[in-house]
Length: 338
Ligand code: GDP
Ligand code: MN
Image (cartoon, rainbow, N blue to C red; front, side, top):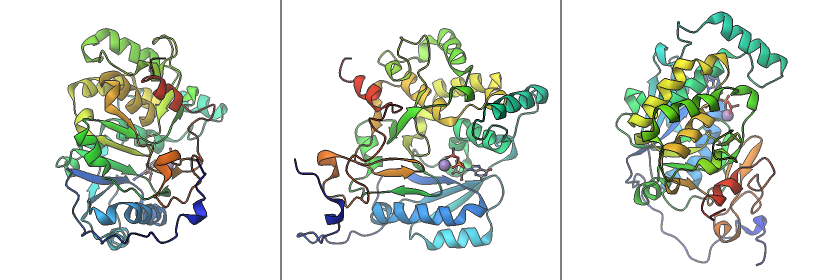
């Protein structure tokens, strides 16, 4: 197989495709972005790649969330960046603040300990609010109630290849609940007691653990310890009905009551990943191999046949997929009987 040279990728195609009308996406879905007002440049940059590579042919609406009001400037610039419908949601205080029952002395101690270990966002409380919000509250926002599927976008990310299919349709038509592009290992010091808490939950609620689960993605010893693998949640195309399910609701409440979002720094990526891997059958997870995606400092670029014809700006297969810290192999092994 000849390697595709990315510099050839922009040669005009022999077949001329008729432009498709805007707004033909048929899934019950939205693009969703949590952002701060001062991130507007990164927001517009992400939107441009998503619109150019995918959404200008589908017209899926954009939903923006913030714990403070978006400025008029933010709103008008964002509206100018798409012909799709745009809406803005204000996150209520109780979804974006440290609960008052959290022991502040313990929380401070936890942050100091993490800072000494030089962990990123160690002593950052807003970051913890964000992780807790993405874990347990985004899908509860009134503005998202009308939607089932979402594509999470962050400021300063890139979709690096044309997306020539509708990923929402793909999830719906194949009965999948969670799609990802990058999977690798978490900083253990941010989640020291997460796995023991998960194990307690599984003992209390065996009824929620799917018998065809993806535990092999999370653990190399049948659940005894967590191997730190998670799907990188800054990219997610997923089904909010899963987060809205009884299993996930009970799971989030259990984690919340432990205070680990504040005493430690539990991330929404391991929380989402652990839930999706345990409570859904492994067949309902999906690796979007054919979507090129970059969030600094990592990326996934399609390879082989998946790469052809997508006008990628990345080199085929140039990414983290099979790097030592990647968890893609463990995901693949779920389906190869290993
Ligand atoms: P990282 O990717 O883990 O390094 O974290 P980011 O800084 O990219 O934050 C993750 C997402 O949450 C991005 O969409 C940010 O725009 C958003 N975010 C982070 N902190 C805040 C905040 O304090 N307020 C708001 N509104 N959004 C935030
Ligand atoms: Mn980010």
